[in-house]
Length: 307
Image (cartoon, rainbow, N blue to C red; front, side, top):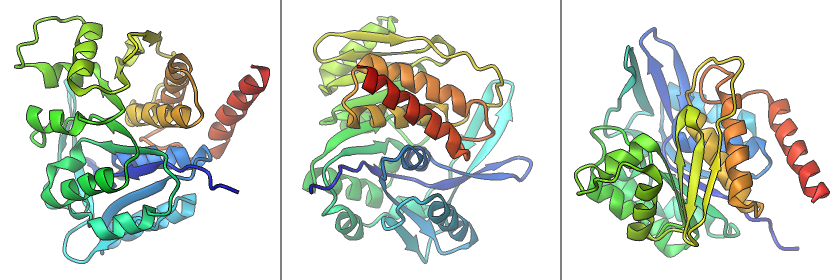
């Protein structure tokens, strides 16, 4: 019997450290892997942590959730990643130190842990490309073991520039980014059209993916495809709003889930919006109640049987 496909999730796992001293495990790729594991997809998560107490906590959390830890490397020289989160009237800002453990993901062990994994969606964000070592490993993975590449743009000043992002977006099959990120990577490029759909189509012309997916917060999301199709969904109302941290990562996880189940773009967008709203009902980026995941899976299974 052929093995089931598994998504490969590559990138940072770290601690978000708040001004009051509280800490939460995060990092967009880790959040995506967490959701996919609970949804029954069994991702392979590739990252690097320090040989320190924070690293131990991450490994304990990964194993406790049942997430495959074979791709998580341990660094004896550099610390587990952290991000300092600061709140202001204009929203949260992020201070991201350099030379963290996740900046030094080594290629050979990463390649080894996925060499026999059946080809699935390969997910990575844009932040992991900031460093020479992890950036080179990312290129090895994408070149030596070609997969269907899903890029999640997550711009974190000062760790990005337009040329770097344009390079990352080449040869991927799906691009997901927010409306603000779409504006940011096109500002200064001579782009004068403020229409988001037109901007997304021009990004598609330059990068040539199958689809560009744009999230717009309370205004919902849309996707434009290589075939010229436009798909839209409204945001799902959140009746018990706690915070929006991780909502975009939940949306990305649902896109990957849908791609691996052959869903059409409209269904993926609707499910992504619904799942993102669930994350807004909890503190932080992660849902710890597996019953919520089971509820979504059962609903989709019922829909597919009806079809």
